Length: 180
Length: 327
Image 1 (cartoon, rainbow over the protein chains, first blue to last red):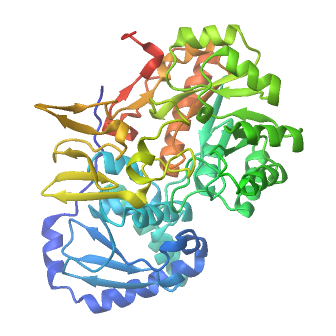
Image 2: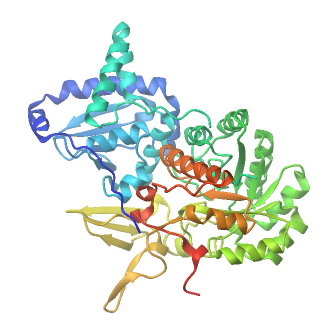
């Protein structure tokens, strides 16, 4: 019998503290626009949600002072960032790095669950559908951001890679090994 | 001959990850009740399956399509259509469990190779040879209840290829006949493709103490410092009188990596990895690990030490029945 816990970096408390004062409405609007861009470029993600395409999810980065409420809304998503517990029928909670690693396919969702780095509450089936849909979408969140910057995309992408290397947080989709 | 790595894919992305990681063969299923991993957000529609098979074939990888639930009386057409679609998608074989569906496939799709699913729980040479004689079954996936010598004894008495699980969830029941999930939820892997369906699972985290319920029954309660298992009844932790413990099976995963040379000597052709419900990250890591192991075996090198514990249920592993010490 062996144990090998995952090493999940935590968002530094000293940086999280000032976020308590951050205005959340602009952040909500930005994330809504961002999620709609993703919906356009990855329509299969929302199709794969199936009957859970109108379920409200609460994504809770436990090392940040807010939660993200995601309403897929049938492929026209809405995001509301709030300081309360958030409203939703399924809640997925874990350190920000665990949630980002899950999105990018750097971590396995079940492994995060076994190691207690990820907590699921509420509608378990909806949470599972979201996890599977996101895993299949092969998202690269940094690429989605850098694409918005036009000609600045290459240096912005390099900045994400630099940050990833120095923080240990998965900010890009890992390169898959070449064919065997 | 290199032992064949048979790898799970719950999504097209996982299929591509498995192919790139070196899987010889992928197994997957349609997004409906015809396969035993009918979970939300998982599996392939017909177009995705066609594309997935084409992608795999372009890399020299085979695709097996699992149609391994038992058809509901009156609704057989759903399962018949799945067999027909598997053939038209270009599948290299179908993995079937139901005797009626095997008969249908043998009569109507004789050119489509047939494998016997673990859901058929075929655990001796006589029954395996019956499936071969009656339905032309070419390969059997053996249940996870046999020791290596027992597998060798079966292989000595049959020409049917044998495939065994080497990694992942460890089902210790007579597969295809287990009613534990049905008892708690009304849904089962056998008829509905779901063991402990997520729709009936509830988690409550109370100050780090994780309480898991299935169909209203508390399956286990784990302290903050402990790893969490799947919410299946067979891995549940129950109290009776003044004792508390795992009634059927500890929350551990199978890992028979170090037994691969013995399995090869026992006549096993293919090594199966469990986990169609797992992510592409899991698939890539496990496939790379096992591909390295079989390549090392072929080259006459020692088995590499794996790093798969963190991917395992309960973060603990066992060689299961392959190395039985209790019989």
